[in-house]
Length: 327
Ligand code: TRP
Ligand code: SF4
Image (tube, rainbow, N blue to C red; front, side, top):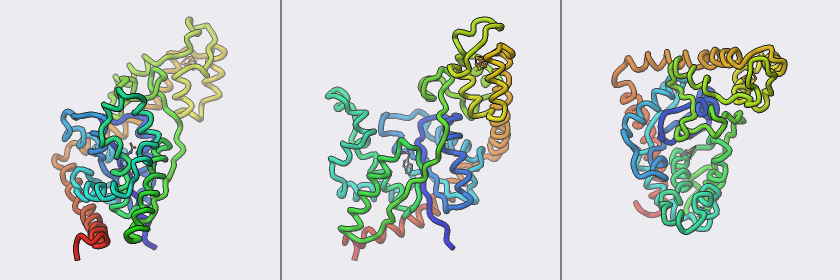
């Protein structure tokens, strides 16, 4: 039986961190076994809230290397840049005609950005149309399945409505894409705020062992635990929050050790270092191997973009015929 088509994108906003690994990439790697996967760099989406991305070619290349170093496999998944496939833009323009403004303005991600007149004057048309472009990204490959995080659910709901409307008015061309939600643990930054490159609190996939050690050293522990013999409370400690995710097999031991002052924060951080290093070391090694092959990313993208174009061009033929653009 043919495998279902799956599409997902990741915005090119900078280097990838542990949050991307747990939240998205590990899931993408697994899905390669069961679906016809199309994974792309959402370059245009990255511009919806910034006017410029310094060194974009390098940002894209590093992201693709990161994907491959965690196990996204160009032999099993189609890997490409949104910005190389004009069909995404064409379909987005067309689907925009089937998208009432009210639907977009009600979208929670847009409402969060437009709170007052001041922010209204800053937010771009591109940002308003974010879900329309996302719909085109998925529909142009007739994807049935879209792995996304919970924050993207309203967008996918909108996608279904837009496509339903197009299908009803023009021709039943598009399947209604279903989300594939992965339950992922929330991983906070080393300062206990949302993990984000812009806060400087992220543990990056490219972290060296030394800087990993340094970041773990900076992690906030139980502030009441001042001296080594003070008992601690793991429930308020960032290090322990990481252990919950990365050291599930030793949790009771660590919690008890903390509460009884049996282990010190330094020991506790040492255990975490070993765990995280165990995850990052193989990724680092694969990246080194990939970086030894100059031109690799370029070849992967060229092949991916050829394949993506084949599929997208066929869909757009149907769309253009349906609308009467061509005979
Ligand atoms: N909006 C998605 C995010 O920020 C990225 C994205 C763009 C996407 N187009 C997509 C995801 C199409 C899935 C399908 O995570
Ligand atoms: Fe946190 Fe570990 Fe220190 Fe307890 S021992 S406060 S869990 S770092």
